[in-house]
Amino acid sequence: SAALAHIRSQRLAAARSSAMRLLSLLCVLLAARPAAPTVFEPGSPCLEHRGRGKKALVTGITGMLGSHIAEALLERGYQVTGVVRARSNKRNIAAFAANITVVAAELTDPWRTFRVIEETAPDYIFHFAAQAFNSMSYEEPAYTLNTNIMSTLNILEAVRKLGREKDVRILIAGSSTVYGMSTEQWDGPIPESAPLQPVSPYGVSKVATEALAMQYARTHGLQVVVPRFFIHLAPRGVEALALHEFARQIALIERGLSPPVVRHGDISTRRDITDIVDSAPVVACLAESAPSGTVVNIGSNISYSMRDLLEKAVEMARTPERIRLELDASRLRAYDERTVMADISKLRQLTGWMPRPDIGHLIGLLLDYWRHEISFRHPVGDAADGGRGRGAAKSEL
Figure (cartoon, rainbow, N blue to C red):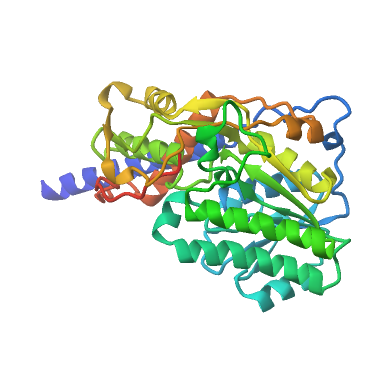
């Protein structure tokens, strides 16, 4: 009868929902698997945990980079306060939210920024809040420049006006995008001495924020360190990052929410990729021990083919034989450096860090993360398109 059929349908839906919840939990557990510990050479200053009794203020704490570095700071003994925006997605800090203090602020507001720093009285500031995507910066150059430059200026000015130039150590997140065209002209890994020739508004904004930080160090005596981050990845990222976008599409395909096609932009490029979990203690150590005025590359010194990484991700899918790749012209960027690889000689001298990349493990974590995300965004029975359209944003490579 229709009634029995309806009951059977409800029971089947409940069973499927339960199975998806279990799968979701499994994905969370897999994503939480402990990574190999960060390795430092004997005698490294990073082996000493200097955070006990110290206060760290982390901007952009709900982001991929900020959330993982906040966890590293907690492990090193810091009291952590995170700055969030009123509309921030706080799921990325849920696992350790009970161990931190959270304050809401728009860092482009100078008065609010001043009040946050005055009230929290940090010993260290880790500034990661930014409009951080190259592709978006081409479409929103004014927003990118205003957000990144003004938030950095407001933090530097607040510390200066509070008279805490010698008391607060500030780490301003830099970026490999400052090199831009120099990566095409340099033979081999690119050092800090290479010319700054950015090719995106985002890259220009990072040149400007870095220059501001150095100016405040020289003119006002602020204690500032700028690590130039090459591509760093871990769970908690967004679709604008290429490997995250590949993993997202694969997770949608596995759920039957998208046809078995992974659409991509230019995958002939090569990129230096680092696991944030491995490098997070290094970032904390730079803030603690690098001389003020230090600008230093932070990467793995290994360059990966984006095509190889995509093919590896597909190989790790549950039904790889079903999936094909397709170039999507809408994902091509206005300018794409061919090969980017960090010279990390200076970083090794400062920290004694010995990168231990495991790109297969990292891709597996990203796939697990997006399986969980898709099950959260699209519960069983959701007939949403799942991102099949071609209007997707260009992803970062």
